[in-house]
Length: 282
Image (cartoon, rainbow, N blue to C red):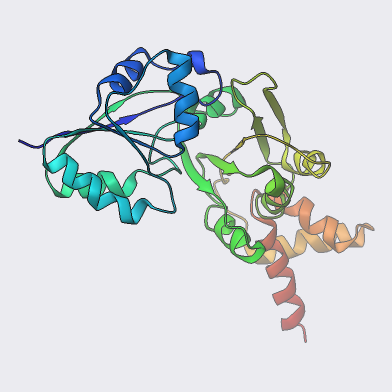
């Protein structure tokens, strides 16, 4: 008889947010696979429980190697509990490989629902929550980051990202470039912790704020692309709008940014249209 894999959500900040079942699962599991065993120790101490089973580490560096071992435990009838540092396993954290391998072996997989930075930030953002998509972490390299953002430049759903504090200013600046500086967003910092902060505003304003330095764990929520009008403006129309602004005395860079916001299109599209038009004129 095969065992069962339990994915357990852990607090994203305040340890008192731990779901009641988490303590039961920690105490009763045959194997507890933890992203960080030191953090697990702090959590079990706060909950007043002592795992009876074997505790092993399961993090990005050993996930591939340890997955087969845990699957064999499951195949042998063990109850394996998977916990990460914060939130739900598999959501930008270790877990996907183990779940996929367990499903492949017809092992039952269930979950202990718990706090989620994605849903918490979304709810607190003040932005539409009826439809959204989670984009995880953006690439570290500037070119790849811009490419990833351009893929969702026309996405109508609210976007949710995780980001490291030391890359936040670059990511927000890239979002402002691709989505438009006036696109609304919210930076959610240290959710449920003592110094929780929700900073809301246009992307350009948030990028300037982040340039001063930000600490803590970050979740960014960005408004989806605006609905296009009945007749979407073509590239020639974008170029005409830029020229009108330039003739009125605006610098080309500011004119392109303003037209992108007005038309509800990525700034890169307006820039490329202007460059092509100039090249075609010879």
